[in-house]
Image 1: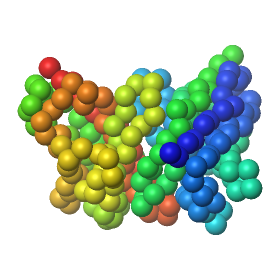
Image 2 (image 1 turned 120 degrees about the horizontal axis):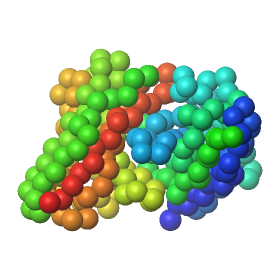
Image 3 (image 1 turned 180 degrees about the vertical axis):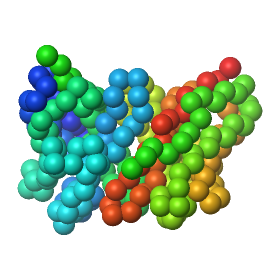
Image 4 (image 1 turned 60 degrees about the vertical axis):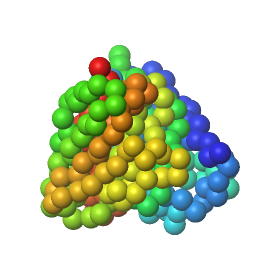
Length: 116
Length: 110
């Protein structure tokens, strides 16, 4: 079965940086659109960013210019570089595989806490 | 990129049917046949229940169905079961390779 495992979360100070990773397995990673979705404590799911198989990227307005999504198809890994972090970026970050303009497989998430 | 509007909570007794609405705009829900629905048990990975407005992925119970009219999509759970208690989110393609989620609906089985 498809597996997505996020890592890289943790505690970071406001203004700091963090890089999340999502290791993919049991499917042809290079062929799929991949997404990051986050959930702040007590709040709902929010789409953050996506990267198509050919490498084109898109971002939610709230993270544009601060976050960068990328992928390494040789390593079957998705990344999210997060800079200039703010308290409202505190959330569980999920990676998800795109399919038919939806997300059919999700990881378990990694928690990012932005606090001094 | 305003969030789609969902009721905060919906409840029903075992065996009953419930419907969750999801209202967007003519730029997202009303413009594409690309609404998806997710079930999320806290602490677990979200699960895709519906894609492309009304299609069910393999393995999802046929107790889950969905439809859309104009800018409002709906998810119906029939024969409500205790295991259906979870948070449910709609999501729509919003153009230019972006997506927007609803605020989520907590389903309680009484």
